[in-house]
Figure 1 (tube, rainbow, N blue to C red):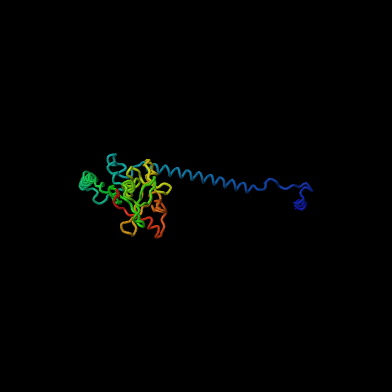
Figure 2 (tube, rainbow, N blue to C red):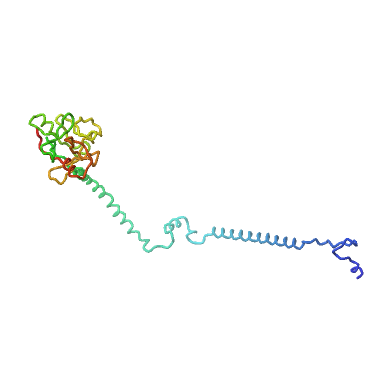
Length: 279
C-alpha cells in the first residue's frame, strides 16, 4: 500500500524516476484485428476458387458423357436426324410423295412460254411515228405571201432584203416574190422559205434577208419560223424559233422580227396570207 501511495501522478512520471509500462504498445489490438480480417478474406477467396474449379470440372465431365440417344448414336443416325431442326416433327412432314409433284409444275411454265411474248415486241415501231403528230408543212410548192392590211403588197426580195412591195407584171418581180415553203431547217414542224436561186430567208439583226445556207446551227435557227394562227381565217403569223415571242411583221414595208404586242396594229402588221406563186 505504501508503494502505491508513493507513486507520483502519471502526468509527471519522470520527477521520481518512475516510467509507464511499455510492454504493450498502443494500437496492437487494431493490428491483430486487421490481420485476422486479411486471413479471413484470403481463406474465403481460396474457398471460392476451389468451388468454382470443381463445378467447372463437373460441367466438363457431364458434357463429355452422352445424355441422349441422338448424341450417343452412331454418325449415321446423327446426320439423319439433323434436318429436323427443332426436334418437333411437323404434321405431315414424313409424306414425301407430294414434294416431287410441285417441282415439275413450277418449272414447266417458266421454261418455254416466257420467250414467246418477247418475240412479239416488234410492235414498238407503231409508237415511233409520234413525231408525225406535229403538223407537217405541205409539199414544197411555189407560194407568195401577201399582207393582210395591204392586200396589194407581197413579200419580195430586193437587194438581199425582204420587203413588202407592189408586184408589177414583169417576170423578174414575180420571180422575186415567189418562194418555196419547205420543212424548217431547225424544226421540221415549222417552215423555212427558199428563193428561186436557192437562198433561204433568215433574220439577221432582226431584219429578214435572203442568204445562202452556211450549214451552221445558227443559220438553221434563224431560217426557221413556226406558224401561229390568229382569229382571222386563212391568215397566220410566223414566230422565230430561236427568239420565241418575236414575230415577223412589216414596218415601213420592211420585214423584220419584233416582239409581240397586244395591239390591233401589231396583229395587222404581223398577219399574212399564203397564196399561189405569182410567177
